[in-house]
Amino acid sequence: MDMQQVSGGGSPAASAIPRQGTGGARRVPGHVACVMDGNGRWAHSRAQPRTFGHSAAEAAVIDVIEAARFAGVGWLSLYAFSTENWSRPSEEVDFLMKLVRRVVRKHSLFLHARGIRCRFLGVSDPRIPPALARDFDDLMTLTEDNKGMTLTVAFDHGGRRDIVEAARSLLRSGACAEAVTEETFADHLPYPDTPDVDLVIRTSGEQRISNFMLWQVAYAEWAFPPVLWPDFRASHFAECLHAYRQRDRRFGGVLPNEIGALRP
Image (cartoon, rainbow, N blue to C red):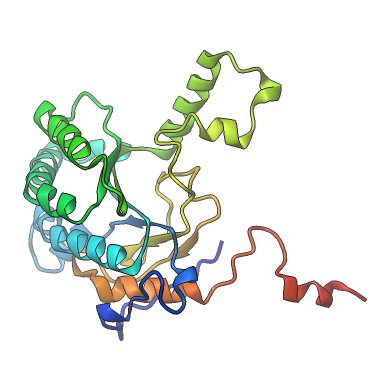
């Protein structure tokens, strides 16, 4: 795993993002996942409560969705709320539930008009307000036939839980041990048509996986821009794509031009 950090300074313009079908398009990652980190620190630096940072994150979310779509990214996954986040103060959790509902309702038609298919990964905890769960279902139904980018919002998500649930599903199916392969196991994960993640972007400079899509990020490249999520914009996203294009993805193997160097 390449742990190269991407600088948050000197950002190129959003128009510098290569579009699918232009030069370098083959190097645009098919699936980008973002760990949206730094809302609390952003608010603290302004002597504001953490909820202030969560509210400010909305602009970054919309900017990144537009940037990914413009670049030709086929799949974008955003880590919005983890299974571990339930341990936060109840006031903050309640605020997040209301904020997410407002954002979903506000931007549903915007997402649909751009041909984006929306999904929610997780959403199994009974503490999720029924009205919010209905809004999630309504957005998925509204956009299910769209053919553009697929946007997956991981909400009440845990990578370990997904793997455990897949194992339970396999056992219930009666599969024998010898018949279990990586492919058959993946078929029992939520949304099994989701491709492996090519690039994970975690903002704020923190370098942790945090239980995010553990199966799908097995061979992902990582970028750790120091910018906090509320300040993250299309230009920072472009920097991350640029860094991704500079890397050689070996998947545990050796590149063809390196084979000769192995011979005596």
